[in-house]
Image 1: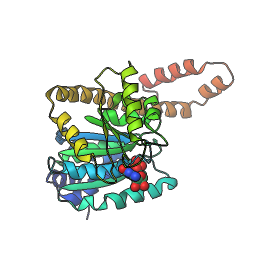
Image 2: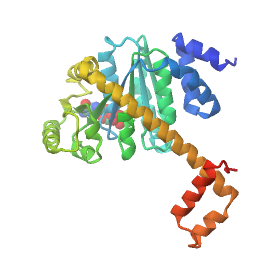
Image 3: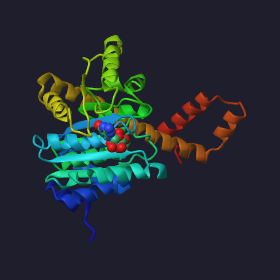
Length: 318
Ligand SMILES: Nc1nc2c(ncn2[C@@H]2O[C@H](COP(=O)(O)OP(=O)(O)O)[C@@H](O)[C@H]2O)c(=O)[nH]1
Ligand SMILES: [Mg+2]
């Protein structure tokens, strides 16, 4: 049976689970169908609290998200989890692991769990993931938890997409200080040192606290740093309390608004960059002489960019 985009929207807005699953597939695929559905859903988004969870691979994010979601389910009866995983055949196992791990979570009433691939964005959130988040928001979930892998620069994406950013680190490989170097901790609202059942968690916390005291790059106040074990569940209640507290804090809510403006601006510019990139490729395909001139040293790459930009503005893109 084929549903029109408007029918699908109506069912999503009514909270129909299967429709939500289907809509997410459409949004994830993108293209014209994705864009059309997104345009119908977007006016209904904006009410959910968005909690971003990120950190190095293996820090225990998925295990923690499962526990944390259970803790927060009392406050947010309709709760969605979106796990964004770098897509490659190599990480297929990780995706499968998440699916098994979060399978039981999905059984709770009002809870929806979904994994999606980040398509080579190293765990970053591309436009499709952001549109899926909007879709879940429009579907009436009160809390949208999004898990992304923090690697490289794209890890900052989640801090832009979320109202509250939780960074998860663990003792051992890829520990806290390494994450700090990548700049992510500057955007953290809460830091969880996970795997407190293993040795070394306290040391990581102390190192982090020292680093925050020294950090001048941070404009906002230092985040709460909490120890937890997603294995035993210890500390997860306090972590949930910390999320709850931020969500209800008036000053912090004002910041949500500022963050959403910043995020919107970033999406607009990002979209423009993509479109301009496609247009530039069309110009260069239609006039290969430009590329040849750069290769032959007759024109600088910068001058060629300006020429391409001029042609795009004049509408000479094909
Ligand atoms: N000992 C211990 N192991 C944990 C803890 N949390 C997660 N793990 C394990 O660490 C591995 C990676 O966990 P996962 O949640 O997939 O990490 P992610 O890559 O950050 O999502 C798994 O084998 C988990 O069972 C914890 O608190 N303590
Ligand atoms: Mg994971």
